[in-house]
Length: 118
Image (tube, rainbow, N blue to C red; front, side, top):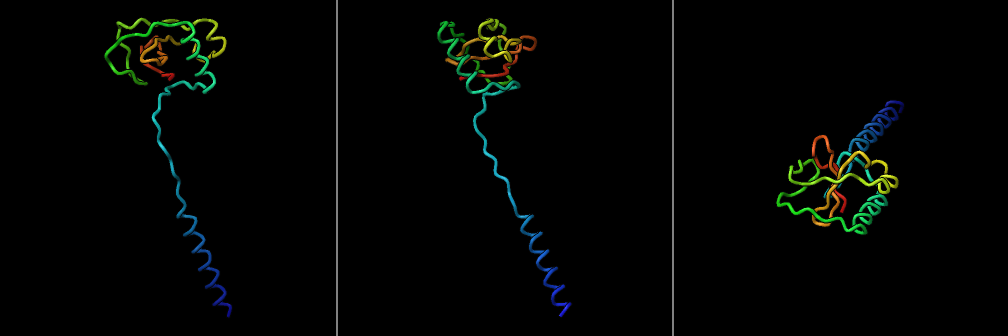
């Protein structure tokens, strides 16, 4: 009888371990326009509204602009205005331009796109 109980306990442990090993994790992928800096959705709205209200002239370039791409030297990068960086301090060190109605933040030392705000 003791052997039967011991065998039952071992079987129960084995089944429990098997169930623990069958758990899975699901991840989803979305189109990402975020780069090496993180900007909250609220601050993204603040930045986009600022550019729209101040009628910043968009840049006309043929190359596709993506996070991590290098901006052509012909693109004039603008400094982030003090009133915008006061609301979103994390962007003060970057430069920006407008392309296809998006605000493109660029690291001025590398000319690489770090964020695209749609």
